[in-house]
Structures are given as C-alpha cells and as structure tokens.
Length: 257
Image (cartoon, rainbow, N blue to C red; front, top):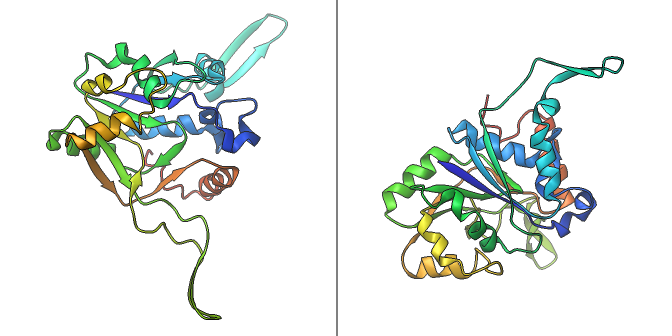
C-alpha cells in the first residue's frame, strides 16, 4: 500500500520558517516533520510514498537525493576529490516526488498523482504538517470493515488557550490547556479507494470541501475515532511545542523503536 503525503502548501501561518523551505521540511529534533510522518507509516509496514510537492518542492527533492548524507557520517578528502560514507543509514522507503504545482488546492494535488495510485486497491493520504500516534494498522482494518470509499481519522483538537469557568468575579474552575469543545475534527490520516479520484474535478478543488462532502452525503465516508495524540504544526508556537516534546524524550508520536 502507498501513502500519499500533501506537501505543497505555502505555510503562510508559519512564515518565520517557510521563507526558505516548504512547511513539511521544518525540522523537529533535527529531522523534517515529513520524516517523522513517514517513520510513523513505516512503523506500520507502509514504505512506498508519493509526495505531492509544490512550493519550494526542490528542497524536498534535494533532501531525498542526498538522504544518505543527511543520515550518515561522511569524510571528504579534498586532495583526492573523494567521499567516504561511514555507518550508512537507510530506510526501506520508495519515494516518488511529484510536482503538483505551487497554487494547486489539496484535491487537485491528489488528482495529479492519480497515475501512481489508480491501480491500487487502497491508498493512504495525509497532510505533511502534522504528527500523531494513530494506529495506521487499525485504521486500515477499520476502513476495510466499513464498506465505504473513504475513511478519515476523527480526533479532538488540542486546546490553545486557557478556559475559565466564572461565577461573577469568582473563578469556579481553571483549566490551563483544555481540549476543544468536545467536537471531533478531521485529523487527516485517510484510507481511500482510488474511486475517490473521480470526485475531484480539477486543480482548484479543495479535498475537504466538495469531494468529502459528497462522499459523506452518499454514506461513503467513515470516521475512525482516534483519542490519542494528534498535533498539527500550524504556527511557530506549535513547532516549539513539538520540539520540546521531542527533546524531552517523550514525543507521543514516536511509535517506532
């Protein structure tokens, strides 16, 4: 099975980091968040990736072109114009990088990689800017049991601000970082039948609008409920939070050894 990763957006809400690189290449613990997402899928046996590139996609291409240099020790002998790689580290990944356009919407990006998934029974789809400890194996099994064309992962968004329960000028209760209002949201991590490609009209189609809305109306969209960790990296504050979790050695999304 393949995992398709949307990695072409502009990342305007975290422009402090995206002026020189695409959002999925922002690093957490010295590795791009894209790498963390791929490690999660790889842990569940999915090692064939199709990455939808767009804004500054060449940065992603250069990263994978020189992956073994990023992950290994290396000696350059300038006098001999030679390079020796030590302790070469490699992942069992097959990575297809597709230029899906700078301004293409999410649905359009999926449409543009149709040739790479059209003949598959199923494929996974996720966003290139969020991490989770979602059980991909269970998610796929859940999708197969639903007899639908699409399954999304429903999750509760993390709280961003403190909430006060007030009685006049008195505080009845205080929660520094409560979760959202209890409503679950689309957390990505989809499992899809290639038939969903027919629901996408063109480059300006937003995946989260017409295609998903139509699938829902038809009864062809299921929701796998995930109550564990899920965190998008929308802002610099999110990036700092994820970095702190990683450096603490207790990053919840690190499900691999």
